[in-house]
Image 1 (cartoon, rainbow, N blue to C red):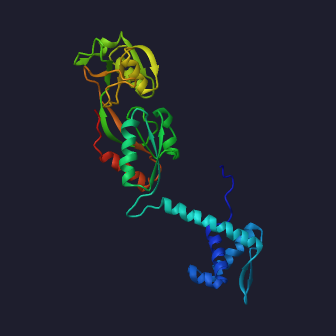
Image 2: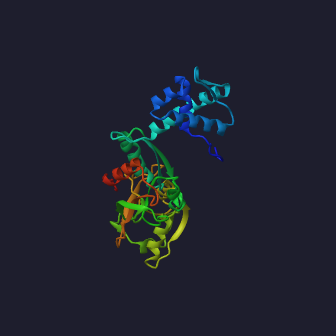
Length: 306
């Protein structure tokens, strides 16, 4: 819901009213809250002025009594204060326990490697931290970090949007995937020059597509693209059916396609430059302790990359 106006009163003013009504006198409320009687009296007067209603009747002999409007305000104020206290408890970090939400952005092909570890292992260590996931391509991350929509993201080092803080988790080179019965399947390595006239299944999702094509263009080659897809698994499935080869960076232990066709992985010769996988976070925003803990957890972990 869009909030178009901030209330003129504060939770402190409401708490003064509630306490004075519960104890029956302003002086008793002042003693319990460790403030002056004049501070409570002035606060209640200001609250009445801001709401445009008399909330209590103050009599020296009989103390303080709420009016009908005051009773309505006090009832709703208790709910507001309880919710505010609950919000503070949910977000408050203590020496023993982290708490609160973290929104994690992740490039889709990295998600099967990165997210299960964070959700299971980091989540188990910090049960009061709520992890929310946003899977998106790197071009769509632009602005989401600096705006606060995403607290931290896991991406390839190429084409990182903006100027966020970043640190590398690991790096690995691209590889070629082939169907098990492909004529090149028995080779130890594969040259891009030998693939250029064959059909390619291109992972057409930034920055993967740019990186793949740049490897060919860097050697003066133009690959023959038969199909384009934004899905990592579709690339593997089409390759498994023998419809072309694929070039990928992310490596999974599963050597079969979604349909069960066998795949083989071949290194590229000459060797291509490894691509780094990085954790990035906003450069202009104060970092919560829970986010810092997640980044430190990710950097300290030994990631299985093959």
